[in-house]
Length: 123
Image (cartoon, rainbow, N blue to C red):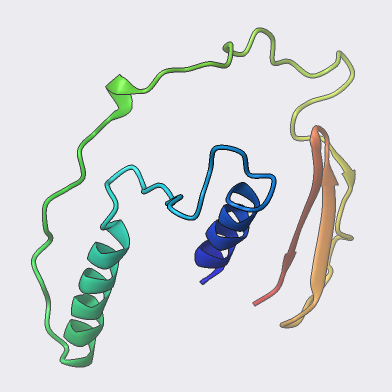
């Protein structure tokens, strides 16, 4: 639904009064696998849900094509990736106290060098 609303909002702007060459015949794009990807997802998720309810296993289907060799890279590679002389990548600037104990729902926070914030909730 979020995708539909986003598409409709952009379409309203492009086909509105100041839309220029665009008109109400403007249509959205599709995914990498074609315009019927959503229909395929719906079909397969319904099949998976049904098989789970009936405790049945289903064979795996065809795999999507491997397109890695057809992708282009527009960003340069990493030139230099080293920490400053007095630091290591795994240095901790704010750690959790030793022998701490937590219960479900507690927020745990630790700050690492070159990583702004790493946090999680205990579940």
